[in-house]
Length: 144
Image: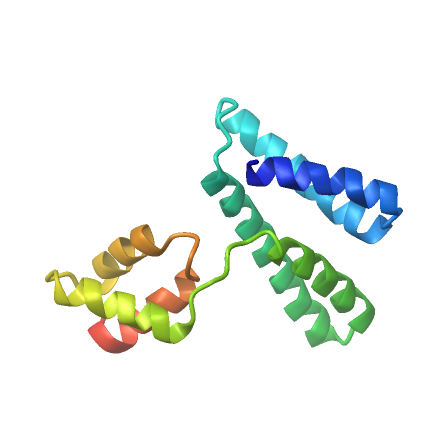
């Protein structure tokens, strides 16, 4: 079963359980994934699904930061709920130590530095590590 199929199955489950909060999040995800499916000519792989989920998770995190900054805890909590639901479908992200070890390994086997090293590392770690974290580690250890 693909990740998209799992999400669609969970929509049905949320409907049966009358879990309106989860149902709203899942419907939004299905909608975004269907747009992506159209853009990718009907070839929606798990990697594309993960990309959409990461994008949606990032939106929620930015909203949480904004709502927290302006003191709107009710909206921030709603966004946190959505973020948790989205994160439940994402693969476990690598820790900073694991990312650092992978970046070191790539840097030691190549002469790449700065942006080129970030690009190669992100190609290898896509979907497993946050791009901002990879860039931070590369810039700290291997310069710009």
